[in-house]
Amino acid sequence: MKKLNPLKTIAAILLVSVITSYGCILNPDSGKEEIEPVDIDWPDLTVPEHVVDTIRLVYEHFNQATENELMSHYGDILYDDPDQVFDYVWNMQPDDVALYGEVMLREEDIAGTWYLLDNSSALTLDISPGSWGPAEDVCAECLQTTRTYTITTQLDHGGEIMNLAGNDMRINLVIGPNEQVSGTWVIYIASDLPSI
Image 1 (tube, one colour):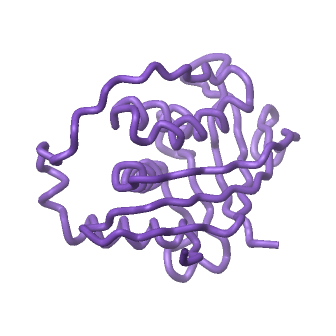
Image 2: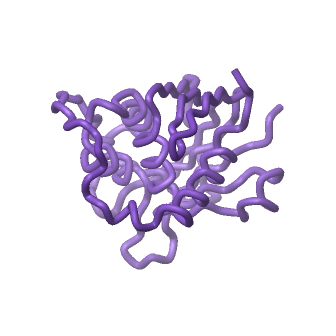
């Protein structure tokens, strides 16, 4: 199996797909079989680890839940500033900045994640356990954690089947209170860290 950085591959696939298949995005007939509903016990986001649990569940049930259900819960954990000033951002690691820019915005992350989920026939995401510490440089109540994660997928990109197995990658998540839903946590910043 070819070893690639899934983030780079996903970003490239997403860009090519949007450019080359714009008409297909508007076509409601995807040719996919109807998904039978699965009862997923989604976390209520009242404790910090719930944001990580939600990411795990989205990937775990990638082919067992509807786009609306998966992306609704995924979108719920990414901070959506009502004033559109401080929305969630994904900071690219320094090696990726020249290719993809410094940040991936909230809507880009949601679209890229859905592309991966929708076009994978096999998909696993492993995220290491971790602890939470203060991130007072972002906000007084903010917390942060650094985790290791690996994505492995069999992805159908326009009929070309790609088997991708990522190396262990590191991510720093900064979470804070969700002012739109009192008592819940959301991710403010995700930063892809250089490999050790």
